[in-house]
Amino acid sequence: MSKKTITNSLALLLSFSLLAACEKAEKPEVKPEAMPTKAETNSDQDKIQKTTNTVVKSNFEEVYNSFDLDFYKANVKILASDDFTGREPATEGGKKTTDFITEQFKNAGLMPGNGDSYLQQVPLISIEADANMELTLGDEKLKYFDEFVAGTSKSVERAELKDSELVFVGYGVVAPEYGWNDYAGIDMKGKTAVILVNDPGFMTEDPELFQGRTMTYYGRWTYKYEEAGRQGAAGAIIVHDTAPASYGWGVVSNSWSGAQYQLADAGDEPKPDVEAWITLDKAKALFKRSGLDFEKEQAKALTREFQPVTLDQTASVAFTNSIKRSQSANVIATLKGSEKPEEHVIYMGHWDHLGLKAHFEGDQIFNGAIDNATGISGIISIAKAFNKVNIKPKRSVTFMAITAEEQGLLGSKYFAANPTVTTKNIVGAFNIDSMNVSGRVNDLTVVGFGKSELEQYVTKAAKRQNRVTKVEADPSRGGYYRSDHFSLAKKGVPAIFAGGGSDFVEEDKAMAEKWNALRGKCYHQLCDEYQEGWAWNAAMQDVKILFEAGYLLSTDNNYPNWYKGTEFKAIRDKDRQ
Picture 1 (tube, rainbow, N blue to C red):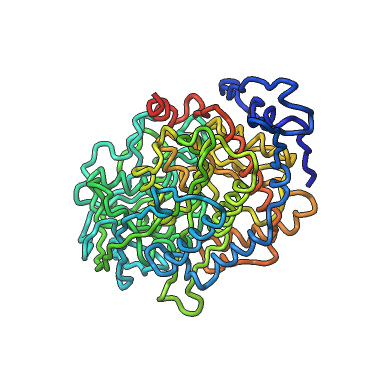
Picture 2: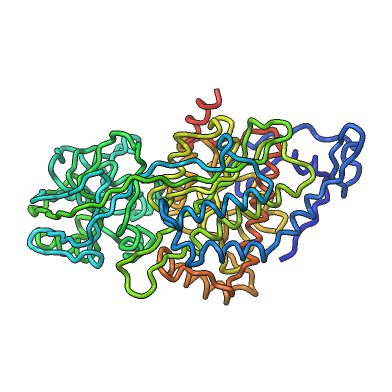
């Protein structure tokens, strides 16, 4: 793909008004800084920075064009190797991972980002349910792993539902701003909620209902369990359905079996005694035994007039838990800013994956090559590039490799609650998760496009590669709420998740079809392993865009904000007062 030569001065490049593609009229543009004089620009081709006695020509383009693809690939291969046993938090493989990343950050010339340490210890509780369990729904016994998975978020040695009344609560949403309450008129104490995945907007595709096909946080499984707990439910069972969940049953069974982690100081928020998933077929059978048609009841749940439905059946399950208190670590390193060191631009991505499943026959290691060895290697490469530029950022640039994302964004939640940098001084955050290795693209996906002015920096950087920024192809997946940037967004920090695309360049289309199919098949599966034949240059293109976007922000004076009407703007405005 051709690359545009930058013809403006660096000062002009960094002060140019950053306009997002397809920007809505009500979105304010980031105000440009004062334009440089002709003497300051020197020429259209030179980028300069005045010092006391000399004029320094920027080496930005040289650094941009010299990213080491072999270095990037080697780090992906190392992190995804069996030696790291799937990078599970609080294991030897997890410690080996944080040691490796720490060493890479040191080699990139970064300083400790948590006082005098590169590590922020995250206290965790590991709760592993005994797989020798049965779930009884009415008079049918379900088979663990194949038809249901269950566990608990409570630190108890034994969890149990005994003849708990089953109640269908639709999507399990209480959203006053939408005039929606799926629990209206029912006392859930001692009962078990049966809950649909995603939110009502997905099924109706009505843009006036929630956010249409764009998933809101009300559609996430984490919310379903949280709300059931607030309602006093003893149990919460989510009905898996591949389309609205955006992943197959195999992802559920692999992700929710084995050790599950919680933050050790998660507070006293109420939780159900048992949290479970069941397959769609078993949910349909359950409704049929109640004399109900599942599809008809599902349709009723798409309206505000929905009322909870008692299924006249009960749920029973009992299991013991192995509980271990442990800790894992976020790895945090910083390049100090030259003029505004108290202000920070953040790069973040999770280092953890699903670890090793000892009860599996044959291959037992979930290597997590795409998810997220590719992202961590990208962050390391970007850190190395920042150390090479001769005109250093005004603002500090902080690099974070986050733990326990796969367990519900725990590492980033802990950082957001215990930030090493006050949130009002985090100018913006770029999250890198599961990079594109399928093929080069003409566009660039921005997950949650239209939420914040931060996307304008990515749009500007993408132009160098003649690429345009676009909303994700399938916003119903709820991607914005499924990765670590969300934890900072909830604190008001503008945070963006960008990478890949859907418009593949012609010569890469055949390869992209092959690798995209494998990518979907191998998400959270044993086959997410390093492949020498991946389109590595596609990942490197995204690494370069994110490097430039962060560099633009780190040398800027503006504070990007959320666009008017987004759910995080009021939080940011209050934090910045």
